[in-house]
Length: 93
Length: 481
Image 1 (tube, rainbow over the protein chains, first blue to last red):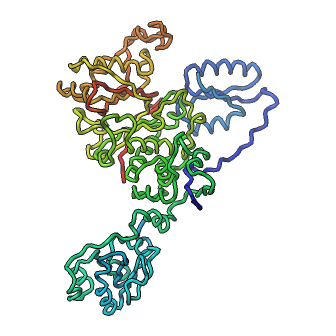
Image 2 (cartoon, rainbow over the protein chains, first blue to last red; image 1 turned 90 degrees about the vertical axis):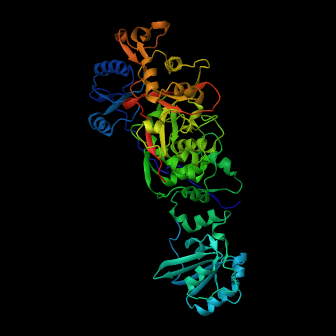
């Protein structure tokens, strides 16, 4: 019963750890991306958020995934990352 | 995997063991060969003092036997310029004479006597040899189990199981699994969701061992994973959805019968090793390699027991219908796996219908309820027709297309019945559709499979999930060795 060995069934990947960015002191002049994942009524929720964020002095950009069942396309993720300082994702109805 | 480092030299090589009666019988022949053939090397598997009087090479580690692919002793091999010219196994006098050029060799022996099994193919040790001589092809991290640790509990403790015990994937067992394919262990066959990691043959083999697969099942597991790890099938979404769905695997082709898959009594249930372990291996691979675990990316509100394993074969031989794979463009001789996103099966009872239109009406009424009787077009479904129901259509000469057309014709839903609020139910389509007629299923969204036991006027419905580009399309892959 010695030296029993099994092979690792997992991907063995090492996850990169990323530090969270510092929380902005103010929402004023921040560019907030609102990502609609294409679930029913997610747009209703995001429109409400948009009006509140704009009223608070933020600039808002709207984005939309083609379908909620798949990860956001890499180009969309890149666009959000380059254009926005903050992002809010509407997960579901 | 064998003959990578064949140690045999040019000239004659003879592999024997003392325990073999045929080897013992030919000791005088061996002695004569040793005298007359300078380029003879004798390898002994079990006792280096055998044969007496001959300077033999100790092959008790079976390295020469393994790399020379010996399955019988005695085996006599002739090599020239580093390549094998000829070999003979057992004692076949004429072949030995031709191979050695000695015309009167073994004149006092019988013409023929079969050999014995080589120790290098002994089932009790072949797995160890496979690791010893071919184990460098394994790249996975090795995890040592402590002496005091129960190996089955160790697999639970490390989070590798689906809630049931798994077979510990020792290198020996994984090497045996890899013998079920000709593909390179490091070949990347797919990108596994949700973590989007490269899925190698080796990692699939490890999980197939854990699931309890036999090596001959392995190509089916690989094909199923190739099917579900496509953008069309969208395994990421199938995992992440809150709906109770998972991959439902339908196997077609003559290979299903070779590996004794069940397409008959209790085809969708327990009891058949191939059905259960192929489906389980697929799920374990997604869990362990892809990282798809319940409560993490897997967000199912309820799930269903089929997410442990849901795999069965279509009963093709007893079917009056074109099979699922042929309907999807494959040849009947091809072995295929079709992956469909589905929930658990529900039973359709109609013990009275003897006319095909009556039974089509029953199917339509039951299929209408998939996920909700007022929700059209959004979900696919699979109808698994039992043999006694199929007979009704066979007698009326209704084939697959006719039956599907008849069912779909009966599932054109009037908007007035399915708008929100109709029938006292909030669920339904928007008011704008109240004057429209909407089909329950999109074109091609109803799949038909023939399976089940020969007694029982029943069929089964497997409800699907968000269909098409929005969610998942059924995907069929050919099983390749």
